[in-house]
Image (cartoon, rainbow, N blue to C red; front, side, top):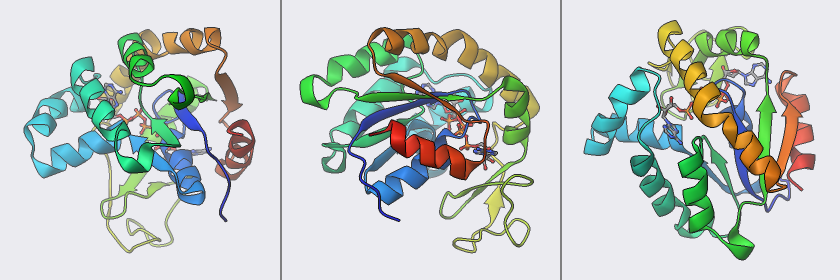
Length: 218
Ligand code: AP5
C-alpha cells in the first residue's frame, strides 16, 4: 500500500536490528530512495571493481570500511536526482567522522530530518544474523525461522536462489557487534543532542515495527 513519507531519514542500529528489512519496505511504499551502503559495497564486490576489492577484506573480517571511501560513495549517491527530496540512509553514517561529513554535505532544508534508532537486545541479534538468507537476484531478505520462504532456498518474490552473506559467520558477527558498540553507538548521543533522534523497540514482529515506523517518520 502506498504511504506518504517525505523524510530525509537515517536508520541507525546494530547489525541485524532490521534496518534493511524495514528500509526496503518503507522506500518501496513511499517511492523514496533507499541508500544502503552495505548493498552498494556488495554490488561493488560482485562487479569486481577496485573499490569492491578494497572493501571486501574489511567486510569479510567484520570491520568498517575506511571513512574516506564510504563518505565519497555516499556523497555521490545522495547527489543523484532520485535523492533530492527524501531518502532513507541505511547503514550510514556509522562513525562520528561520517556523521560530521554528512552534516557538512547537507544543510538547511536538505538536512537529516529523522534518525530512527532500532533497539534490539544483543542476545537476539546473533540468531537473526546467522539465520539470515538473502535473494541473490532481487535482494529480498529472509530468515530460516523468523521469515522463511515457502520453498527452502528459493525466493518467494522472484524465484531467485538464496545466499548467506559472507559476513554472517559467527566470527565476523562478533567483530561487527564490537565495531558497532565502539564506533557507531556514540552516534546516538550525537543525534540526541541535535534533537532528531527517535527510538523504536525493534524486537517485535516486522509488521508491528513497520506501522510504528511510519508514524515516527512523519
Ligand atoms: P551492512 O550491510 O550495512 O550490515 P549491518 O549494518 O551490519 O546490518 P545488517 O544488514 O547486518 O542488518 P539489518 O539491520 O539491515 O538487518 P536485516 O533487516 O537484514 O554492512 C555490511 C558491512 O559493510 C559492514 O560490516 C562494513 O564492513 C561495510 N559498511 C557498510 N556501511 C558502512 C559504513 N557506513 N562505514 C563503513 N563500513 C560500512 O535483518 C536481519 C535478519 O533479521 C533477517 O534475516 C530478517 O529477516 C530478520 N528480521 C528483521 N526484522 C525482524 C523482526 N522484527 N523480527 C524478527 N526477525 C527480523
